[in-house]
Image (cartoon, rainbow, N blue to C red):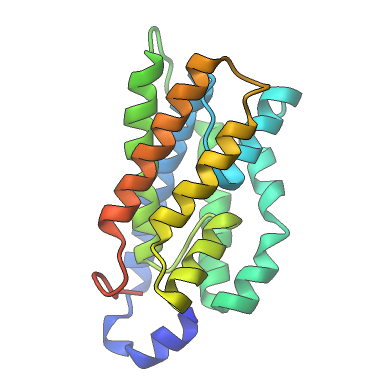
Length: 207
């Protein structure tokens, strides 16, 4: 689907350096939001939510777990969205995984409020996703499916992602307290509202 759009609208194709800058900026935003979430014990949805669960239960680094969970989805990304989309998605996942391991070497928090982290982290994650989506990339997993459904059937990626995220966060109740769960749901809603308001079919066609 992504390849078909590229062929049909060659005049809106992004330059290589534009894609590269968007991938770096978007993944920096997302990984910084993830860094805030892990510091206060928040959860989120999609494959990142699964990675958070494994991270909290096993103690394995989030970046390593996140990269490993996404491996099975690359084939689906290639089959449904094309080689270009899959390559960008692989790079985005690798960058988020790497930056997630790098941030703690440069950032330390003396005090970080739970709900403040949920809102600000959600804004960072949602903004990062918009950057990736507008440059033909995602973070694999559920994001690949929601982008495909939006391109194919016109369904809003943000709303679809929000529904999946809420289900995953609710399923995480056995790991966190009700207060942390409430803050996690708030963060998921904020992130997906950013996506829903800024990534609509026909609003932005750059690839």
